[in-house]
Length: 99
Image (cartoon, rainbow, N blue to C red; front, side, top):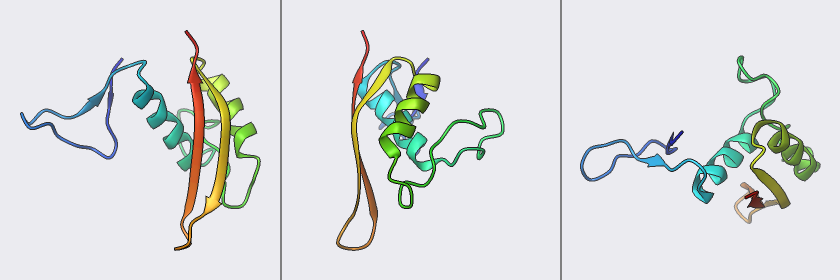
């Protein structure tokens, strides 16, 4: 099923922008949300999410486990957490999609 694009955007014709189910952007958005959501934050899926990667460097393992459970089409190749020069936490996730 197609998904709303986050942050919420609109097309020039006024329709809400969506991501096509199964596309790289679709899965990238799911993984990005996974890295931003703490476990227990979503009542319907309490195991979804990962511990704040700023304080826990086991991000690749957590993302891989979460992806395996929630997004079986995706596998995590690598993930890296770094702090930018302006103090913001940046997460780089490389993933593949199973055919």
